Image (cartoon, rainbow, N blue to C red; front, side, top):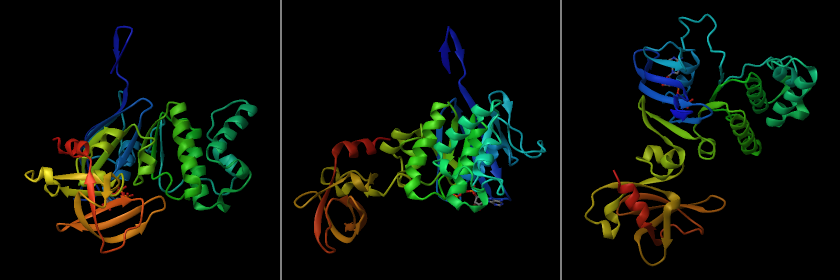
Length: 336
Ligand SMILES: Nc1ncnc2c1ncn2[C@@H]1O[C@H](COP(=O)(O)OP(=O)(O)OP(=O)(O)O)[C@@H](O)[C@H]1O
């Protein structure tokens, strides 16, 4: 809620309230509550099969929910039992299977949905979208001859041509190679912010989350276990499940740190948060060493606990080193 000219204005526009859903008997989602504000980018994350796609389908009105409601401002999203043609006009859903016209060109697939009257403007808007997906040179090519990744990019431009207020993206870069992925991410999320389009992205990939999502929702065992600002969740993950969504992480019994010997608690420590010393710290015998490009990922045992940590150099299996965790990190993670 924001205050404007003395009045309070509700800026939240999508409301998901007490939502529960099951395909058969076993619940898939239980008591899910969250809101999405105007122009906000949300990432939905969680292990495979936790219900991310299901949640997007419910929001779009493709599935009938057992309990709860979904509202777009003051308008309730009704499921397939009420809508002959599922889906709502103000939002678009980019599913894992792309809905394209295979026998027409890339350009035609994109421009078909542009509600523009003048031909020059139609050309300019189509070009803007083709540029965004980096496919200007494919404008005249028939979609059926494109690769899976190229088709996924066309599908993206096609939903954006419809200028939704809310875009639902299900693993939007799953078919796209690493050469193109980073540029496309920057283009897409920049485009959405520029045009004030809200977005919910279901993803496994932290590269889709950290630089672009304003907030992250984490699903585990049917429930929403976290709803927090991205940086806050990353810096202070409450458990190993959440931390592992962002990278290699460990659950460390804090009593292996000498000064915390009396504290019987585990804390989450990312692999990159350890500092390696040849002289002092937590002793660890290296077991495995993986070259990761700009660093090495090392795996070792300390008092029976398997710990993974990063170091700038390779360390031979069997060697003893010492690892350290910053006191600020420990204190932060020990907070309730
Ligand atoms: N049409 C369906 N009928 C029955 N069960 C389904 C159906 N679709 C999905 N499920 C089940 O519902 C659960 C949630 O599936 P969903 O596809 O939403 O998960 P997800 O988090 O998106 O997974 P992934 O990350 O692998 O895409 C899974 O256990 C899945 O097997």
